[in-house]
Image (cartoon, rainbow, N blue to C red; front, top):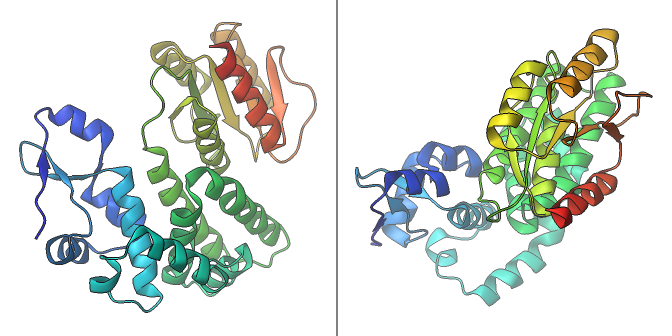
Length: 302
């Protein structure tokens, strides 16, 4: 049986770790199985608050995801919990063709409404690739494919919602990992009535990998609320997802945001298609590489 570390300051624990419910959603393990793996096999050693609540580091979530992938592949937890680093490398390399499939395999599981299978595939890819590469090479292509199938009427509403829900949970959990100390703050959200948030989540993960501190606020925020968040957080830029925008009301909201915040604060609007001119001090970004270059320049200037 493994013990648990206790930290004196519960606020420090909560700021740097995840609760049991977050880990359950991120890994797909039930709370009962998670506890059994801890007690019987020492799978991870959670930190505990002074009140006794279990808290998990991002590294714990990554290890649990890998353990689950190995168990799902047919190995016993009692065996994989003792694997050396070299054995893990061998497993990941040997298992890659069978257990790290392309986006098409995830799409097939979503089409069958097989949420468990889709989650297993995505979880293993997240653990194997890391959050930034996962966001770029798996999450973004999957979102684009789902969108294309939806427009061609080859995907049902339930499949689209299932895929979105899975990605929202995984990307959100990955984004909770701490950012570099002193990194410039960038706000990520969408304007009012724009509820497609996953592009902003992907961008936030990529930005953190490039060295910024992303503040993700979720979707559908009025310009006034975004401006308040920018001021209170000390953000130096705002990144807005825009999938369903490009109408007069949306442009008016964007113009209002631009006038409400300091002119030195950059405003980036990201989406698959550029819709033409924007207010001064606002830029369309249609390529993730372009976005990453802008973020790197921001970090370099800070």
